[in-house]
Length: 155
View (cartoon, rainbow, N blue to C red):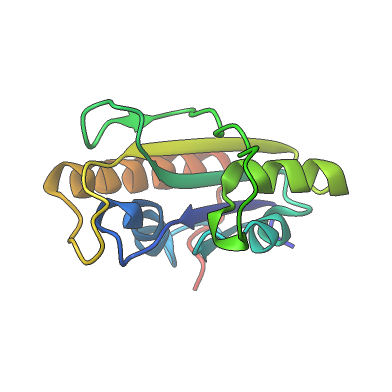
C-alpha cells in the first residue's frame, strides 16, 4: 500500500475531461517510491480502492464552474453528491467520498485539484489553456511530492 496516491480522473474521449488522466500520465515514473499514480475513468468503487489505506490522496479532475478554462482550483471542494437517481456511469468523485466515508475507507487526507475545462465535446482534443494547466499542475505536484516524500522516482 502506497503512503500517498495521486489519482487522475477523466475520460480521454471528451476533450478537456482528460485533464486528470493527463496529469497522472505525466507524473508516472517521476515520483518517489512511496507515491502511487492511478488513472480512473470515473468508477467510484475503484477510486475508494485506490485511496484506501493511504495517508494522503491527491485527486485531479476536470471541473466546470464557469471560471476561465485552464484555471486550477487548489484545493477544490469535491462536488456535492447527486440526489437524482442515476446509473453507475453518472456517479463521480462526490459519490466516491460518500462511499468511502460509509465504508470507513477515506484516506488520512484528501486533496482535490480541479482543472477548469472549456470543451467537453465528445472527440474534441484538450484545449491549449487546459493543456497548459495540466503541465503546471503536474510540475507543481512533482515538486511538492518529491520535497515531502523524498526517495527518488519510481522505476
